[in-house]
Amino acid sequence: MDFQTFIVSFFKDFVSILSEMSPYLLLGFFFAGLLHAFIPKHRIEKYFNGSPFKSSALAALFGIPLPLCSCGVIPTGAAFYKNGASKGGTVSFLISTPQTGVDSMLATFSLMGLPFAIVRPLAALITGITGGMITSRITRNEPNEAKPHGDAQNNKTLLEKIKSVFQYGFVAFIQDISKWLIIGLVLAALISALIPDNFFELLNLSPFLQMLLILAVSIPLYICATGSIPLAAVLILKGISPGAAFVLLMAGPATNAATITMIGKVMGKKSLFAYLGTIIAGALAFGMLIDYALPAQWFTQIADPHLGHQHIGGLSWWQIASGIAMLLLILNGYYQKYRAEKEQAAPAPVINQQTAAQFTFRPVQTKTLSVEGMTCNHCKNSVETNLEKLDFVDRVSVNLGEKTVMLEGAEIDMDKVRDTINGLGYTCK
Image 1 (cartoon, helix red, strand yellow):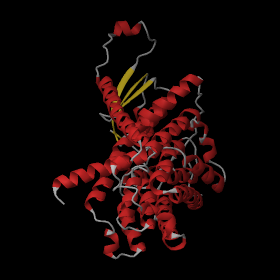
Image 2 (cartoon, helix red, strand yellow; image 1 turned 120 degrees about the horizontal axis):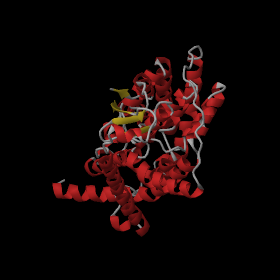
Image 3 (cartoon, one colour; image 1 turned 60 degrees about the horizontal axis):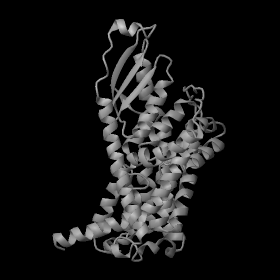
Image 4 (spheres, helix red, strand yellow; image 1 turned 135 degrees about the vertical axis):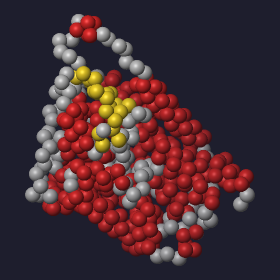
């Protein structure tokens, strides 16, 4: 294959995959905005406690539709735990949430068919409950030293909530996943253009060995639930077993080095072992179920000339329009992120002490900290929300671009600030 042929093939495959996914992704982003605006997470925390089964089941059921990737679930899960959730409920949430979401379920259906779209949330539910119950069992003698905070009041009007649906679903959420979505699409298009069909069949590896190979790559890999879909779909086209592709869909989003570090640091080694053991066992179990027990035709329909090698002319107008809309939203997300970082980097107005004394009755301190590990808007919101709960903090501002946290308040207790940030799984300097 010469370079020009490769470029044309890569471009066609990229446009085809993007256009196939975009209508369902746009619908998923809308549902993500609805969940964010109308189901505040602080009202759910109280259900993450109680009996092992109840807390694990409720945490998994809440986490499955929630559109959080594996980086966004880190601060959210840590915040739940620090606010009084049980270790079992927290681990169940951490296992089930990144595996799927409303956007990835719809995108899975669009590229891989209904059976994959059904098995994926079912696997998230079963592994989440199992991991939570195991964690509750092996950590039953470990006290939870976290103290729950009082519920924040949600005073937004209906109009503000509707605005929040679109602001979160089509701006903030796209900012969080666009990088990994693009990486997944590019890798899928590269594999489709470079690797011959039935490549993995030529390697003559058994399905179980393929699962182990994919598992070894997936555990430390950072990829979101949506970004893993085009990769898994194209791998099936190249001859990998559907069960091995499902291992990527399950273990890729649910595990990565950052999540592993956070769980070990915040919740202890026993919780970490239960978390990893459940995901590994669950991925292999569902992979073997797909390859050895369920009808093969359920999971091989992706192998039809439907993905990757489809001509652009064969796409419908609404698929192409959705693909263009998706690209424009991604570009807008990057522009909005750049503008926000530029505004945050602008120097604050200088107010002399005599002027400040006219507006305040206590000395106000301003502290800026360097914090490692913040990567997305979920990280930003989690840090700001938890620091604002401290009595001595009046205002918090996180700059994701510079990885800094700016605090304003009277008599700021830096030890408590560091404990709060480190307790969320980040590193405060």
